[in-house]
Length: 463
Image (cartoon, rainbow, N blue to C red; front, top):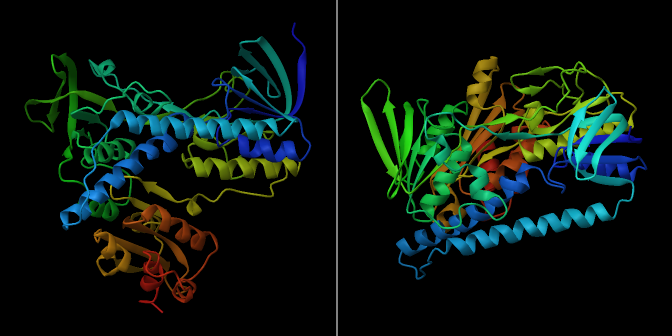
């Protein structure tokens, strides 16, 4: 039998849900081991998600912006070199992998082990990797195993790529397709549609529901869809029947509602129908509780086993990288307090952005959610048509919609569609987290000429 390594903390995973806690506890003098099959500090965000996709997206956004300037008679024409864009994406990923490796090398109390982890008991984890089988006994465990791509099972689905093929380091797709069929109208599918349409690809998006971005605020989605490139062909209420290979690429057979079968053709296809939590092997056997959303954890990130925490995508509370980082720190603070609950995660203070062109973002309560909860609110609005920065950039669609608690006018949340939405939602999120009021927003002198001025201008309509 192999020897057992004694550690204070073991994390299953080495992404954003794991390494913030690992770094903090290692610096506090605890013995920490991170276990990850990739053998590098990287969750899906860096490996195939938010970082590489936004590296491609920002190039597409600059191209779209330049086209906007050209339409107003300003000079400048940009050609699309997709292999160069992929090379840029790869450089960014490689730079961040190297950065994480340097950070790891500076912490002698922290070790990263390449391998797959499984629970033997509630304190013992077996790791199978290149070094064979090793056992670790941990005082505390953080399950940070993330999520994985869901692949649909329609006939011919194997002909379609997924986000990993588009955005992983040295991806499968290295040439821009002339036409692209995307199955799935969630944020990954719609972002990819927006990116490739800006790069000149003919895009058709298939969504089985009545509209894209199901589950997001209705008014925000409607406003965003009205601003997307009309060249993105969206087929809603569509049932995929089958896909087949053709001489020029792919043919996807589908049906709209109860109508007759139809066909759309494209050079390439992508499936983007969601992600599922990755539950470590043996977790159920030791009494770990799960649901359809993932590992059950409360807002202290504790699971049904008090010394085992679950952070990030695996618990399904807020499947976003920055939420995973915050949850990781919550778990670390509670571990340092020897299991006493001294910190908790606030899901309403987490901003979310759909990185389409243009963007849409929200934080806290949206109008739909406030109505579902029966929360009385008053709303304020600022249209980007009035905004100096939006006018400068020629991107005057959309605006800021804010929600305030009736009576106190405390900031409950809001949605932003249009220019700089991803940047503005952070300031709004801080207002939600800090329980600020409309008067606080109204009195803050946001910079001119920036779109953030709209937060104060919207608030000043109420105070």
